[in-house]
Image (cartoon, rainbow, N blue to C red):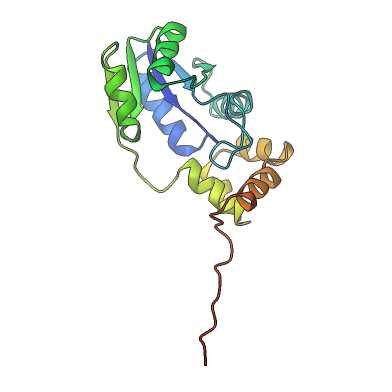
Length: 179
């Protein structure tokens, strides 16, 4: 059994493509990490909310044979990997090359397949577009995810979290030249 581990905050077309690819190789579990984090700029949705979005997205895509679990980060990366292995018992772990430190730790216990992200779709980009009030984000995910985000106040939540943070993707500051 393989495990695809990520944050899925929110799930998008790139995630769906990887899920399709990985399930051709083996029975697949999707492990949603950082489940205890929410109401943060990079984690606006809880693990349970992300699981609900991903479940709806997979159903909409005709994928019903993928198990979804949520996992806490815990006190350390080593703890998180131990929890993943205890709960999921993977024969193979699929990790983006962005999680290289995680991959090195995990490789001590389970074979890791690293993959490189391609394209311009990312959860960060989706959140940035939502925060800026730009509707292009909808094309980067499934209709079910977009409906879920709208129905559960996700747009207002992301915009509020971005306003609170110091780096805002909205209007740039315009400085006037001194005479």
